[in-house]
Image 1: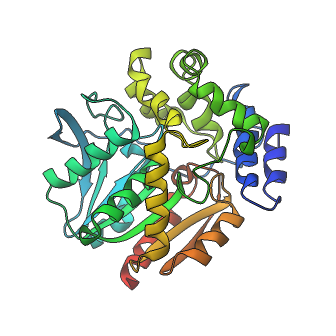
Image 2 (image 1 turned 180 degrees about the vertical axis):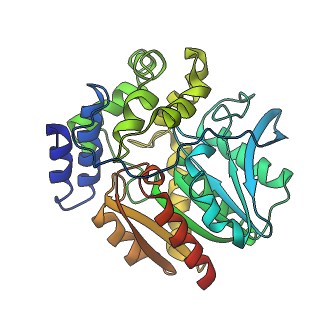
Image 3 (image 1 turned 30 degrees about the vertical axis):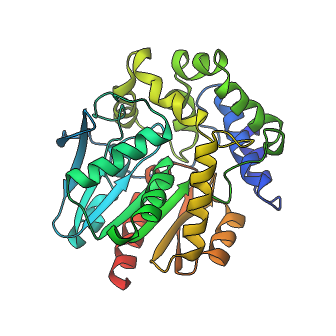
Length: 337
């Protein structure tokens, strides 16, 4: 195990929410030196076939791509940064017998077209809402990750009549966000997000150096991503001009009260979480990044209808670590609920 990863695992044992930021900071420190395999487990058997092209629908002037399989009530998979519907390729088959499994590519990501409005959180929310309207989806089961978790919970808080249940993992969500200040995040993580939000440094890191795909993604998977998977994740961002969505996401992370509207949406999501009677499933891995054991405890104590499922060892992109365990857990939970 390399030094950065060992530090990250030790930080997991610290009490309080700051430990989450410590874990991520340790892994991000590793990213500064490029992908490292020293802390990885032997590679799991995770299929990495190229992603087939799916279907398209026009939403807010943009051609939005999605893949689907199965029939029945919709099971809507929503990814985050910097991934795509490809993230769900090995999870969807386990649930497609229980409904119409649909995985969207957010605007400017995967095979979807460029946004006509921008890549801020509110833009992506508008596309998701429009996508659901265009496909006339109702009685939705959300399966969500990273920023997709915020989008899914946000949609459910605004349209509770159209959502049946939510399964989430490693989400950009309360209680981790919003953060009160950069200082509260610790020197490494706080410094990293200051840099992301800096008009010059952020562009160098994310646009020029392609940090999210070339460093963060492979370092936040607990196995070695193979060449086919890396090619799929790289494909939407070959040109530096294609990488604007990847930079917009970290700049939307709510810190020190900004962006104000994202802080407000996180507050609304928290209120929805603690007040809803809808079935909620949290899937988590060890050690995780955003959802280590202390955060699992917070969710257990605060979400009334929560069930939890441990899916094995993993970091942030746990669909690339244990997709079959995730699919099985979701399928069994859906049968019970």
